Image (tube, rainbow, N blue to C red; front, side, top):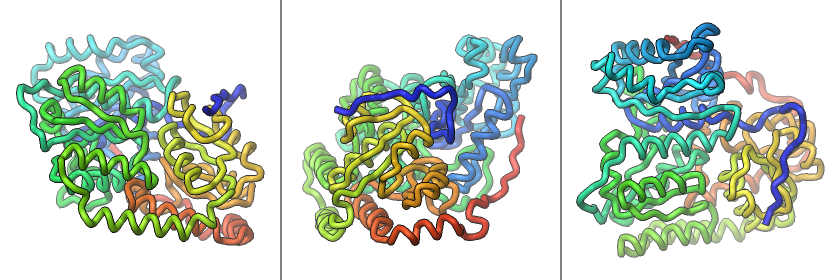
Length: 454
């Protein structure tokens, strides 16, 4: 069992953590015809918007209640009301995700009662679902905000059902899963003749497709009808411990049993997942996945020479850290440094002696003799100073293309991880150092996006 240690520094240096509001905003971006609103200052929304645009390289619909100094002192009722009215008139979304920030949480806005009064005063808003999520950014981290948003949507929108559809299953993916990961899981579930309802579904909204028309809201994702039908499912599958509370709330409200999979990366983890689907559907695993399994075993045989006894340092959100550290350990690597964003029970199962709750400076200090650094794009300076390769994972990844299509689940995703990381470990160290010191021109350039605020 890993020991959890907390950094005692007076300030954060090269932050690893992203805030709860950003996790909640990303969850709402996986809903169809939805518009997330950050209840706070324009700057809070602007910083988050830039981060998501740089990572996904897509248009991100994100709005703000535009709190000023005066409204922060007097309360945000008028700002919320005006924002909702403007959004209804200009965008007419099916769902609005109202997300608190540190400034309004510190002030203590009673948003639930605000919304009751606003609905009484503005009956034209009744056609629009409004889900409020309390996400103070001075506590918790990215995956906490995502989990709270999903749990609140289930609590407010899911409906108990009088019938059960034995072919229908609910999938609750964690925030560490990319659109490609969610799409792969969807295909795996469908191969057993099951119909998945995914909440939220980033594979439909942020998978990098070119829409036929412009919408001021999200385009694709889970629908309100999907959430309301979740009570009719025969089973809920939660991926990552962060989703256990949401699955438990759905069981409490609608009576749907659930199963939590800590990860679906690695040979044994994939075997367990497919065996569960086979048992649930009373259907054999298709030859397609038997062949993919054989390919993964062959890749493990080819790659294990390059992973054995390699010293790896990882910094990521708790569920992602556990997934990668467990898989790398199975491949024979040693986890010499592990840093995460917030204390979570799953961290105690990470295969290392100590897990630090800290920042990327803590990772760099602990990774002096490491062979590989694993974190998001903000770790590139540390990798350059240490002279070791960096494998980018998580969010944000802004200096590489295809972050939304990075696949790490299932047999195919695990096989690709072996090849991607194995090739980094094969490459001579001096080549990494040379490339880090002489980056290609415009390596960090990102597309410019014009955004209109309320």
